[in-house]
Figure (cartoon, rainbow, N blue to C red):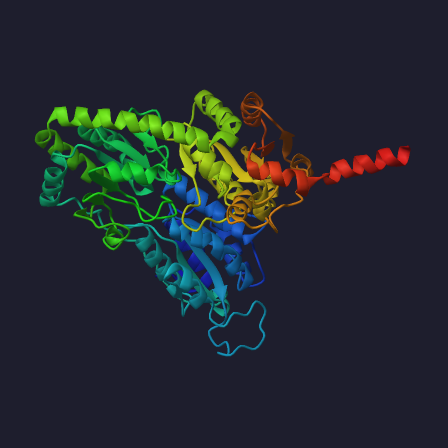
Length: 566
């Protein structure tokens, strides 16, 4: 230990530990209690991205983590700031995304029942632990480095999850000795040969096999395509697995978890191979999934292995290695004629699924058409950062033709609103060469629309498509389907293009597939965000746009001016 190291503050221990682990960017907002942290981040040359709300910081980190696969860091101040970020951390937890949250906490000697200190929360760590399942409150300046090493060791090994480190605010500026503790990771377990053989034997005679693929299998796209061909099996993707294989791959059924045809398809199958997926109701809506008697499951998480399915052949191992090994065994054990027959069975279902997706996605045909035209013309990967909105889960999820390497970032587990824009900003800042399109509904967009200002400041060149139906369309439909009179769902929205322009972004309205494609191409040449507003042709929009909007604020001003002139 050097003399300099022994005299540094808790904030300095944090910044040095992050820098030593390769962290080059932090998302967060400075506050009274974390000033020493931000000062030391600057000393270490770590870039600071300033959102307009801590929830935006969490979503930005989430988007960056999804596209890079690397741990991203959020730094907040105490109390309200932590809870602002916690919704985003819940999303990261449910979707297995590695985001590290760091914040000050109450001082070491703070009275247990409180004394009214600024941002006081008597047990902040316990509140976070209720969401993330764990937290680490350090007790000395030097323990900060240890906490970073331990958190990243956990986050980089096996199934990724968020983590939380709390530094008592009196330790952030206190000096004390400490050492760097490099993160330690273990190798991903290789599949047991006996488990592979057993699974291959069970699959060898299947006549109607299917693969269900989740985001945990993203690194195994080519291998999954080869396994599908060896079996003659159709491939069903979770929302966040879009782009793992090409949507035009001959055996791909797509991300069809929202379609009512899914249970019927699964009921007709005689074997399923689930790879890197939770098989969760948030991804595959019909619940419970009617899985066949033979279920082969490949997953790193041995606890997750037992959820949402009765697994006959568990393979707790890496998706890529396991898929390679299983394909090799099947090519030796399976008759080519069986695979050909399975492929013929699959073709009939592909026609059924395509027709169902077209009917379900009809209100967003122009949106998907323009997005597909843009994707076809884009040389580099396209990242779609989606929101929990009908245009995304009924429309883009099935209607966008993603290529292998494209990404669909979707808030599946927690289903939070306002995710798309800040997640898209994080993705663009993390991988500047990619083309990023965020998509939100008019209701959800207002949760985080302030992050347009952050995108302007960061000169993040991306598009934000706001698909307008006049409010909370899905909830309006659920109310109507219950026989209720829809209430509280029709929203008086702003003039979105004008709002974007007021923040320094570009803003425009489009109506057709061709106009959308053109707007997306033009947005690439603008050093900042472009907001593209379009309305959807849905039953929710037919109802709510007529009775909620009536007259937009800018239109009302024009009407008033005309009335005054007359």
